Picture 1: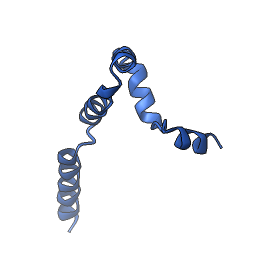
Picture 2: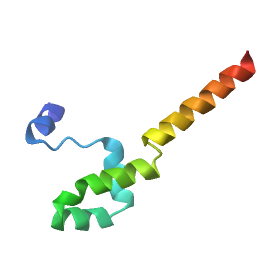
Picture 3: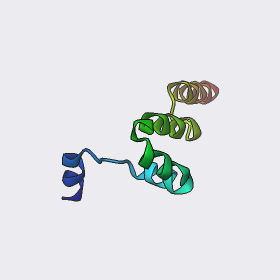
Picture 4: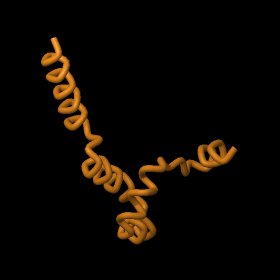
Length: 71
């Protein structure tokens, strides 16, 4: 039920993103004054948690190397 309420209000935030904001409280201040900085915060979150496309490609490459070693 809470999930549907959050989706309707447009406030769906990932639990990991909430934890990131708690660890970096500067974003509360920045977003309260400049809500248009939300994409910047998301990008910073992705970089720090290695969720970018480059990081995913690197992870796949590492997995392929591990599989190759087993063969």
